[in-house]
Every structure is written in C-alpha cells, then in structure tokens.
Length: 324
Image (cartoon, rainbow, N blue to C red; front, side):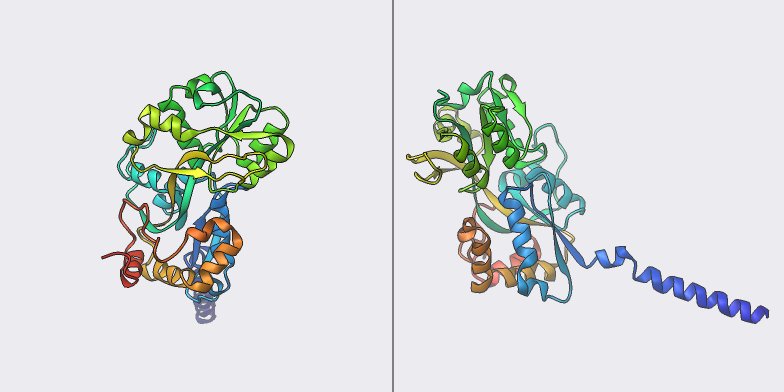
C-alpha cells in the first residue's frame, strides 16, 4: 500500500512538473511583444502590420503580438525593461534616453537597440484657419491638445514649447490624436499638436468639421535656435493639399521613427523579422497598410540612427551593404 502511495505521489509530481513546463510564462517566452502606440497613430499601424503579415505568422520559432501603448517614451521604457521585446521609438528619445537626458528622467536606457529606420515623423500644429494663430508663441492662453502622457508627441511638445517659453503659458490637454481632433471639432480646443506621419487620420477628421491651418513650425525652430540645441531633428515640409483647405506647403521639422529591440532579444529573432519584412513582398505589404511606409527600404534602413544597432540587425544590414 505504501509503495502504491509513493508511486501515485511520484506520478502526481511528474504530471505537475509537466504542466508547469507548459505554463503561460513558458509560452510567453516565444511571443515577441511589439509595442505600438495609441489609436489613430502610425506607431500602432507599424506593430499591427508586422503582426498580421503572412510570412511573419508562418515563422515557427516565435509569434509577434502587437500591443498598444502611449507611444515613444513608454515604448522606450518598456523595451528597456523587457516588458516589450520590440517597439517603435523616435530616434531622439533613444538618443536622449541612452545618455540620461530625458526630461526629468536621468536614468540611462542602454538596453534599447536600433533595428531599422521606418519613416520620418514631422511635427504638426493644427489650428482653425480664422484663429489668428501664426506662431507657436501665439498659443499663450489657449487650450492645446499635446498628445498622450508618455507619448513621443507629448515629450516633443514639452521640449519644443518649453524651448519657446510657452509650455507653462498654455492650458495643456494630454490626449490621443483622435480624441484631440474630436475635442477640436467641438470647440473644446484651440489647437492640437501631433508628431506623426502625414496624412494623419486625426487631422483629416478635424478638417471635416472646421476650416483648418497648419502653423509654420520650421520658422519657430530656426529663429529660436532649436536645431542647434537638438541636432537630431531635421527639416521637413507638409506638402500643399495634404489636408482639405490647406493649400500651401507648411514647413516643419521631423524626427526619425525607429524600430527598436531589447538587447536580450535573440539575434536570430531580429534577423529573421528583418529578412521577412525587408523583401519586395514585405515592403509592399507595409505600404498597403499605410502609405507612410513607402520610406521603408533597404537603402534607408540605417537613416537617422545615431545609437547602437542590435547585433541581429547589424548582421542583416551589413549583409545588405548598408553598414560597414
């Protein structure tokens, strides 16, 4: 009887061990969490596009799971901590984070490594055409949507507006792009700020309910010495006709949007994803999800990257002749 009891106990322990070996945590180790962004933003489209691409879904070693987030800064922190394996982050935030220069955050985020350049993200400041707001400085005393707290839009709004001395002079409303466009349409905001590729669905929405204008942000940046202080920003204009009623080209500035990965993500995972997405078919799929991704190519793979590459990415780009 005792032997039977011991045998049953041994069998039970073996079964429990087997069950634990197939625990959710074990399965999660094969799931690559890809941090995107808020609804209405291009960051989330990136993550979703990678997740749903057929050849990516056919990779047997792992699966990709798109996960929404507040945006660039949150993705930087989550990827650094390993709560997300990959994410979309602005080049400027990777640079500042790596050097402990983020606003009110001196921690160094050194486990966030570059995978690829995706596209340029320009600043856009939307106002009503008859508002009289011609410069960022004219926002003093106004209600302004500045992006979700934790997003790249919010961080860059704080950076730029503080540089111009108006951050503490506006009534700030932290909200996503679609919510800001709706509030703008209901006259609850005088302006809203975006840091995303054009055309933005949120701005298109705003232009359906109001006659809109875009503020010349390049002029404000140039005259204030913004480019000299933050050299990772570059000039970019929003072409005339991008949005209903905006008939003139609007000068602005941009940061590079990067695909990044945690340093501990296996090299072969990063390499396989790049080798799957950066094919003619893969790039065609990305552009099919959003025209913004037409900037993605083998040739532009290292554009705007001033921080270290993930080893898996470095191997891929060296094979393609992009890196030496």
